[in-house]
Image 1 (cartoon, rainbow, N blue to C red):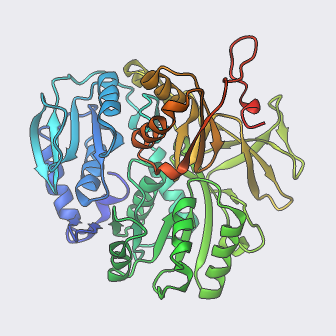
Image 2: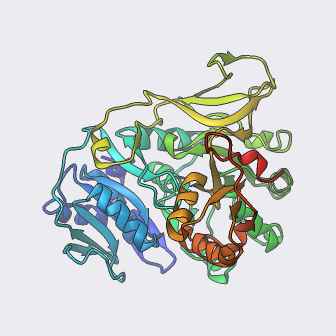
Length: 466
């Protein structure tokens, strides 16, 4: 079985969503028995996720029936979704019943909990026997690049994160991060593994229904990305009366030091705990965690590896760095390290290319106590609202849509887009906001005379903001 679900009693609640819909263990089992006759093992299955019990049931039963889910947002731009569909030709698609699918040639073979399963005209094709799940690496930019999870990755991460946090069946976690996002899926997996009920919402942090849901079910655990915590602090979250809330955890990017300290101080004063974590899609989400007792003295630290994990720093020559406070690339090893990437259908037959070790591309330092701090990145991506967004992919989208030269850079939650045509400035801003699904305020379009390039035609990004 999967995530200890075999140990659940029939009446146990697996999930509750913000419309008050519920999913019990008995309902999950009944649905799986029906699906077994229509959902073929090893089939590639797109799951268009929203934070409802219908999506939760679709995910859990797809994995348990040995099919291979591709976790995608139900709000993915249709053109980008079509691109992924043409690249990976899934045999099945899960999507909300209320949605009008662009899969006009699909046949509905199952309906339940507000979700429908469509059989597409595409046949089931060969994939690696250990392949268990696929996740996108690039937020909403529609890149066909996926991370290939092998059997055991999700279980290992769920077990070790639950152990590190000390989760029990008594937890009442909020999952407001999308299930197609690695940290949102981690909230689901770790708490289900521990025997708890997951409480799912798609309500906005700034809305009253979001907080009403937390209060109604007296939720105990909250996991947020930096942007989410910034919004919460604007709402004066630290002054709210939430005595039942015991754990605040963070992932999805680096918190500003001021915000980190504010949350750590609030947790200490209110008898809660603040837990900073770090993870990637390639490591099934969390791989590092800061002991909450160190939150006040290790501002900005991502802590140490989770159980069964190992971290080290490598210099530019690939040699391990043993000295404290010396920068190097963070490299992680553990049973939650995935198999590698796919950029086309044929890649789904590949074996394990990471072999248990992942080079994160993040530059970090380790202090004398063995705690790690992220100080920069080697590769060209940003984390926006906790989602990793490829700067190169964003450039490609703009070039293809407008036929103009462009260069993208920036920092977490603030992308700078450089173009050379003033007349297209507003159109580019609207386009990239719509394509990614992120707020316009997270982007800034600047018009310059020319994109700086070297003699080989490569963009000189360091010159853009000079």
